[in-house]
Image (cartoon, rainbow, N blue to C red; front, side, top):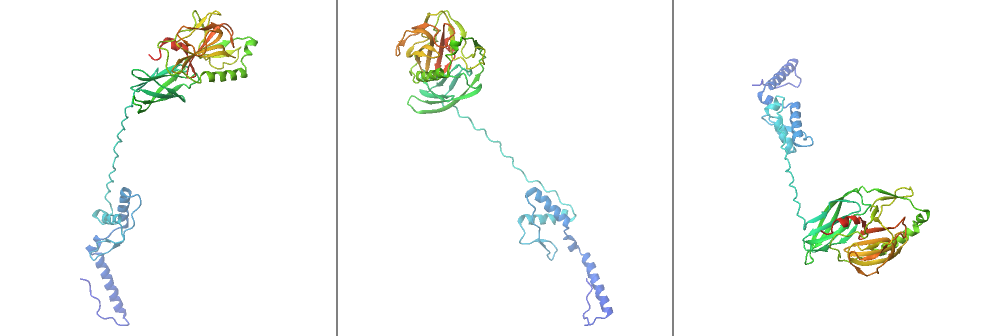
Length: 389
């Protein structure tokens, strides 16, 4: 029991009354300090801070707002209505036995969900198989592209669109890889249709262009011969070649490998070799194969076809061009004379003219070219294999 206060105080308390009042208040303070209920509700600032800080690090990115505790008659702090759910939980942790002793139990880290590994998307099978042969090709050579099961189609390669041809297994096309094509991997695209003309889709295929390691050619010419190579002559010849390759016969006339157009020849300059004239720097690549033989020997067609151009060119001299269909043409240059007319259909081995040295030439020889839609390729390759095969 607490000591009772004096029942009545005078308006002017005596010295003794004041002393009794002070003693009474002191006794009341001592009794409050020893009360077990008040001791249990004590919450130290350090414990509260530790509990809130531990929960904040584990659960929320920002510190929880301070808790406003209101003492109840039993001394248990109660969160005010303004407190958030997170701050209420923090206050409860602070009032736990661990918090009252000054230590806060370590909060369990929030479980972190590990995202499931993405399922790799399955690559759909191509609408039709595409084969590039050979997959590694020297610059200035030929590849054949096949689309099995297709009835018609188009090849897009090196910025050109090439129509495909049908056979018993699908469609195919020959593609010329230019002499100046960059080495490395390249991609072509085939768009195909079925027998009813319905689209079958587009399929991409890769091929790699490699260095052919061709030699350089060093020419020594007279002043008169070198004078033929003028800018005007080059411009005139360029216009002529644009005319020669403006159109093509659609259906291939050949069935086997091509043949050399001259007998008993010697290759004096390989296709694609760099050329130096009179000790000058190596310039453009050689666009054909030079076959040297005696002047006047017969020059014959390498494969069946139709004569598409006959005439004289300022640099290549007297010329015959044969269209073999499917974008493939052969050119016969520096002829002494010609023996055919434009539009004439010729068989392999048919006489076209006689070997000479007209135009820019240092002696009797045939400059033999093979082009695919205007792209010069190595004709020797076409004597070694049949396209298609």
